[in-house]
Amino acid sequence: MAIANNVPTEEAGVIVLTDKNFDEVINSHNYTLVEFYAPWCGHCQKLAPEYAKAAQRLQKEGSSVKLAKLDATTEKEVATRFRVGGFPTLKFFTFGTPVEYKGGRTEQEIVNWIKKKTEPPLRQAKDLDYFEDQIRDFDVVVVFWGDESQPGFSTFEQVSKSGIEEAEFLWATDPEIKEKYRRDPAVQVTVYKRFDDFQVNYDDELQFEALKAWVVRNTFPIVIDFTGKTTDLIFGRDQIPKVLLFVEKSEKSEVAAKVFRKVAEKVFGQARFVQISFTDSTANKITEFVGVKQTDLPAIRLVATSEQGSKSKYKFEEDITFENIIKFLQDYNSKNLRSYLKSEDPPANNNGPVKTVVATTWKKIVLDPSKDVLVELYAPWCGHCKKLAPEYEKAAARLQADYPNVILAKMDATANEIDGVSANGYPTLKWYPAFKKHLPQDFASDIRSEEAIVNWVEKKASHKKNASDQKPISDDL
Image (cartoon, rainbow, N blue to C red; front, side, top):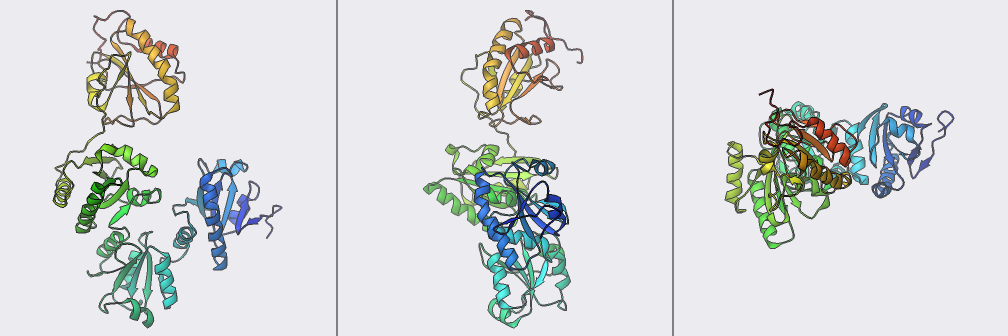
């Protein structure tokens, strides 16, 4: 079909978009999933065949949803408009309005996500084939045994509309389905899962809050294996505490994993239990966040998220036994655990021009009221930090002679945490003036040379040059 003067082509069932035809294509369809890609991107290349198979499957099924793609390296006007900053970026357009795509990257996961967004939340399973297709294609399917006339149906329908994206909702009256799958005629609701127990019956009263909570609990495995795909499933949905077990390939880790699962089964629904392979590169950020090292393995940490979104961490420091983990969780629920912040060990030698700070020495060095301190928050892998290092060292050496009450310091912000101190990027330089530690300032210069650092510090210093015995200015005391 020609659209204006630009005829959109298709490649393997996927519409090829350009700056010129983008708006008209999007506005011509109620639903369009768009992939913004770069030809050189390995993730895009891996997605391409799955994306094409999903497009062809939807076409075959007669779906009105279209899949499209746009090369963001050549069609830059549209890519800039939608702030595409990484590849692949997928956006789902509903009557022209985009939302972020949060599904998986396989044909089945793409199709499932689209159906969830475009089909009614509650559907009738009219025959056995349809029913078995659903429990094969979806991880979680919740079934009401009966129709609109049955008590509890309206409650079930409300739950289906309450935004539980991980579950599919069906109602069934077909005798063939009931004969094969409804093991107990008294049961009104059953969940079918592709993990843990295949079939679980709901045995409580059909009340909205209770049923919804039960469905949500059953959308997660008893123990979730951490992968790049499960990150949002684990951390992005609710405030339930997350109990994390970090393991490696060892007999000790295998024993810990078995104990961990027994605890998870015992308190299922009270916390989310996650097993993380320490060597999985997709887990680097969470491993770094909780401060687990290979020498700690197997290790358990608990992460709790407040209503404001801040995260607190708790360290399990006992032997990994069933009783000890249960006690750890009880102490957390009773608010008898103390959260922790990461800290490296202080260096054995800290006599260089630039002082190394760790979390446990922050107060002693940076918050020393008699000293002006410029502290660099850096990351070991940061190229800009590596470039700054020799300039920072030379500036510190120069200032050391003339300003003995000025300290230039550095702290690895990926391995140490300070309450109220964070880096939006690396390196971040902050100035903590003498007797004004509550008023830190950002290093206000884009130039990070030795000369620029020295000049900036000289203007800010509370002490006069070569006046080590003079008291610092403290006009706000």
